[in-house]
Image (cartoon, rainbow, N blue to C red; front, side, top):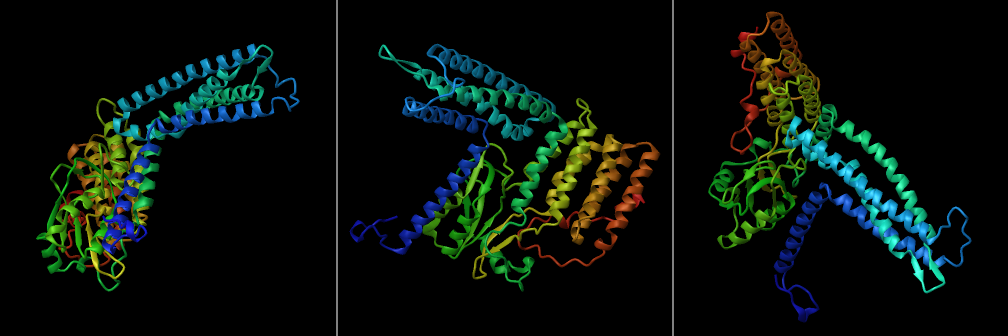
Amino acid sequence: MTYDRTSGGMFRDEESLQGFLGSMQLANGNLKNLFERVIASLWFVPVLCTMGGVFTAVVMLAFDYAWKDSWELPFWLETTTDGAQTVLSTISGGMITVAGVVLSMTMVTLSITSSQFGSRVLRTRIRDRTTQWTIGLFLGTTVYSLVVLKMVRKIGQEDLLIPHLSVMAAIFFAIISLVVLLYFIHHITMIAQAPEIVASLAHDLNRSIDHIFPEKIGDPPPENVPDGEALTDQQREAIDGGLAIRSTSEGYIQSIDADILLKLATDGDLVIELPKRPGDFLSRQETIARVAGGKSEDEDRLTTTVNEAFYLGNSRSPRQDVNCSVHELAQMAVRALSPGINDPYTAVNCIDRLSAALCRLSERRIPKANRFDEEGHLRLVVDRQTFASVLHAAFDQIRCYALTSVAVSQRLLEGYQRIANCLTEPDQAADVLHQARLTVEGVLEAGHHPADVVLLRQAYVRLKEQLKPLANRPQPSKSSGNGENSEEESSGDGEASGEVIG
């Protein structure tokens, strides 16, 4: 980037200006990602409240000092130096003690939650705003009392500086803190219950679905260009033989700044294919993109820009990864079905929430794998999330571990029926029916009581009849040359193998 001081601070050419704007966009993306990590942490709100306590103390002391001679205070606001020091020292000591108790209760709850339901569910417990604001309120009240306590002193031999209003505000904050403590005790007993944890994970899953589906990265393709035919053989060959961009760091992809990649592809007349998506793990020197077009001397710039568009972390994030929350719910259900815990009712709760989320997803527009610019030129080819991939992530593990529990298998079929009520696409109906068939076949192989098997067979037959009109609807032909996830094509009903369940 060049900067011309002789021309009044203007950039010398358009390329320099574009480079500056690109670096600013990268900086904004990094700041946004950092901000989201900070606000999701346990310490951010308490630190904010502590700083607020210092600021409030300074403001209240300024009021007291400016108007101490002009106000006629009522008797219940007046105090003495010894009285103010006693009240403030008692409040500050008590609040810091209770803050320690709150932190201890929080740590105990996190420990129990981790041992009972798995460490992955701690993400939602750490982000609990009630816990954060409770800790912050006690710390803020403590700091406020200490700052005001410092100012309660004699000036000379006769004049006294007694912050009457500040002391009364400290008493008010202490009363509010005690009320919040009572609510926190109620809240901490509620959030340790399995249904509340499942509901919290389901809330994150629904937010991810709302955020991602439908998602918009670039303009949609022209109406006369089907998604399966948007990538021509020449484009496929050019991408396969294009420049391979390799990762310079290691971790889980938490988000991808598609705006940066779209702008890079548009400005350089490129086509960029992303074989990875949020939630995947990247190792160093692993291929994260293939670029067709451009010049060889731009390789270093392309590598730097593409890597800066990938935000990595030590764990997955639900912001752009809908399967993050899906796997958390599935893991909780699988853990509940383990012999050491043996809690099928928690697994049932997870199945209910997952089926409701998939109903929500079935009503959304699945984004296209190929993304275009404003002029209709292909710019990005992405590895997209599909209904089939989310369905498999939700139920494959649970289905395998539920073989020993007929009740959980029955709830799985009820969940499939719930999803079937919302389906509108034939391929989605085939995916759901495929899962139901695998569930019933697994129960048959487990050798359960014939009466239980009959109930499962009847539920499968009802589901099959429910989906029959939708499954018989003709499906549009799909091309396999666009790099899409082909899970939905490989998960058909399989009538031949379905003979075993009648």
